[in-house]
Length: 112
Image (tube, rainbow, N blue to C red; front, side, top):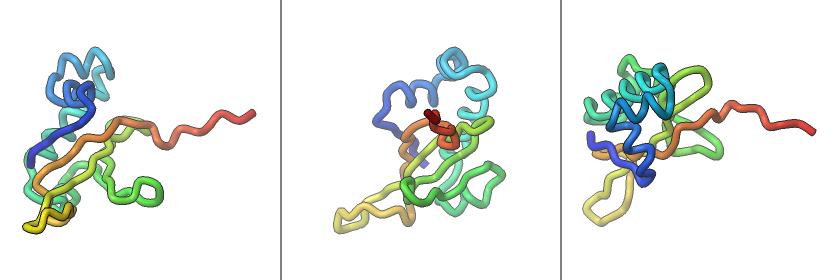
């Protein structure tokens, strides 16, 4: 599967281990490399979810996206898209994974 991103910084981290290690730390950079390798090695979303990685479909305000665990609460958020013959964007039979962000979406909001 192809891996792309509109976020140039994230794409650089995903494709260059030294940059990822410098900006994310060794552990998180290693996991990012593993998750990106998993994305590149599969043909379908089902293959990804059935693999040994820790991927899951997200719900609520992140519906339609997937997360891959990096470390602690940090997740790599991705979406999958392909166009059908009419040009409609669909997730089924996706040929491309789009890296959206690395986020700690479990982080508690500051209370006043």
